Amino acid sequence: MKYSATAAGVVLTITLITPALLRAEDAIEKAGVAVGVTAGNMWFLPVKAIVVAIGALSGALSYVVTGGNAELTQQIWRDTTQGPYVITPEVARMGIGQRPELADNK
Image (cartoon, rainbow, N blue to C red; front, side, top):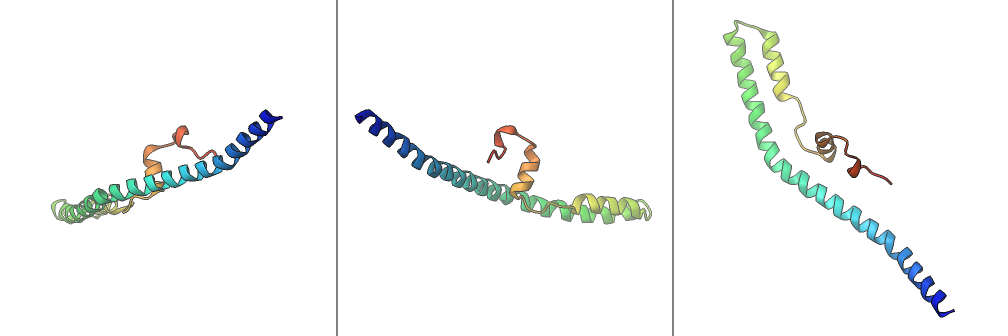
């Protein structure tokens, strides 16, 4: 009888602790994603601003050099000014592709 009460206590303890541990893992994962996205944006935003500025100037210069080829100019502007402008968790997921070990199995 003593062992069944101890076993029941262990099972009850594990049952009560497991959801708390899973919530803690989710919180840690979300914090890690937030830190990663913030660190990525520290580099990405200035680089994106430089690319957009150079693209705008290059597009204007291409119009002059090619004698008014508006299609080429618009293509350069389109390529350099299209988003994304900020790294989000969704953008990061698209960047790494589908990885089964990171899939949400909830």
